[in-house]
Image (cartoon, rainbow, N blue to C red; front, side, top):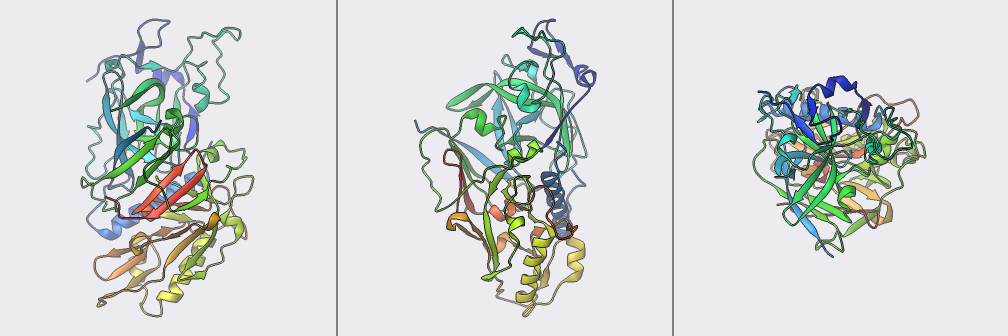
Length: 455
């Protein structure tokens, strides 16, 4: 989950003007991430490895009747997957990164929207599509006393409101949200979310006027009340992620949103969601925690300590599933157990590619030049309830050119001495979810998955 901060009112209100002193309809005055990825595969992987570790650090240490809809889900060159959503009257359609690790839905907003450090491949930071509230008759700024304001600011004080009155002209404070690799700031709107066969009125969505390293809006699919699944009243949602190529080619699969009954597809492996930690950090309430029993490499249990696999009541350790992280993250002490087992089993046949490890930020890497057939140990995650995720080779090793392969799991490299730090110790990223049908069964509080070719 991102971290929310209050922003001085004048810095945002200078962009907005209200139609009258008592109106909550938004009107606007008209006015005219990381370095770009290169063709070098090592630099691309280094960027994605760094971004995955950075996001993991934030997730661990955040500063504070059958009805279905199908939405195309596209892989992005900067590591995420995007969907298109339509808001407003008449509708305006924009792209959003689909993120199960946060809950707020927000879009680039107003003609004055600005994004710094957003020079990604196929992204022009000076020409990012934005939502224009003044062009929508259903746009309203959320007021301070609106219960939805407390979804973002649970302890907000409405100083200019009469405590005994249900009406108030004070607005919900501007927000700043910090993600693992960027930030965004804006005001909360009430809008209409539109799908071909249904619409959701009074949907709370962030109108961001400034962002850093966030080239698209974010559609939060986390467990918070402000998330898209909760606001839509979904019983479940599911997706099947097409393979990453990191080139933004127009290939996609479907994100299925189910608001009643059972969906047509069903997973063959289920594991229950864990109750979120009762931590003083509200960020942990957004995450989808699962119980990971063990990790095996080539059938060998790496014997990761229980305290890393399952979160305690304070939110230390544990395993979450996150569509917004690219490469799976493991705390250093777990990562080293997995890496050493691969080194032990693979090192008998292939030599280490140390120079590539330095350039890519991934390890271990192995030289496989001259090999027609490559055999590597099976990586398996074993979950509560007997569910086993046997990863396809391409989900945990990446081929660089024709001669080197590297494990696509990352760590921060700064293990706490003998203990587990705050936040999840294992974050199952989208790279390891490729070509799996993934089902978030919200009604039955469980995660389902099965391997299949996503297309």
